[in-house]
Picture 1 (cartoon, rainbow, N blue to C red):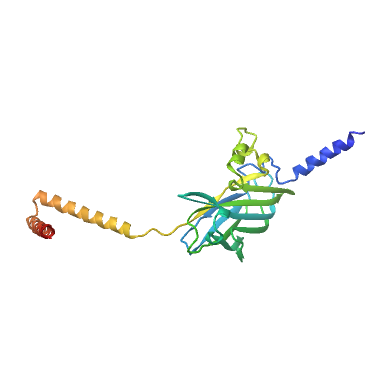
Picture 2: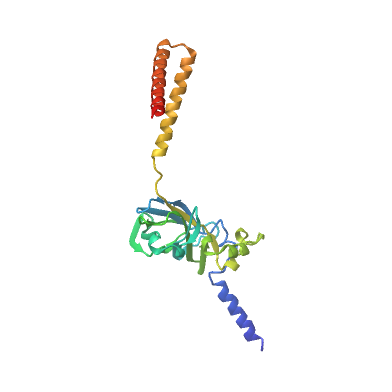
Length: 275
C-alpha cells in the first residue's frame, strides 16, 4: 500500500507528458501526414519597395482517422539574413535596416479576411478549424526601406493545433542551432524522418522558407553584350561572303568601307604621333 502514491505520481507524470506538444506518435508526426506548407510564392524585393509572401497550409490527417485540426495558430518569423559577406541573425541587424511584416490575409473557402498588421519581423494567423484534406491560403506583406540591408532572408514557421483532443506543436528548422539539430538526427527507422522529435520537444518538423531583398541589376551591360554580339556576328557573315567572291557589288562595297576605316586609322595614328 505504501507504494501506491509513487505509482500514482508516475502515472500522472506519464499522462501529463502524453498531452504535451512534445509528444509524437507514428501517425501524427509522420512526414507524409503532418500539415503541409506548400505552394510558396516568394518575393524578390527592391529596397524601398514591398512584396507579397504567399503560402498554403493543408490538413493531411484524413487517410487514417479523418480528424480535423482545431484551434490552429500559425506563426511566420524572419530570423536570419545571408549574403556574400556571411550570415546574421535578425537581431544583429540595425532595426531600421530590417524588413518589416504588415497586412496579413487569410483566404478560406473563397472568403478572404485581411488585417493591417505590423509586428516588426513576426506575423501570426489564427484559424478555428481545418477539416481533413482542407487547405487555407495565407499571405503577408513585406515592407522595405531604401536602407534595408540586402540579402536572402530566411523565414521560420511554427504551427500549434489540437488534433484528436491533443495539443501538437510543430516547428521548422530555423528554431534550432546546428548543434541541437545534429544531436537530434538519429539513424533509426522508428523515428519520423530519422529525427528524434523528443529531444527537440516537438511533434513534427515543417519547412523553412525565404525571400530576397536586392537592387535590380543595371541593364546597360546586357544591352552592350547583345549589341557587340550582333555586330561581330554581322561582320563574320560579311567577311565570309567576301571570301566566297560570289557577290561582286557587295565585295566592292566592303572594300570601300575597309579602305575608309584604314584611312581613318592612319589619320588618328599620325595625329597622335605628331602630338
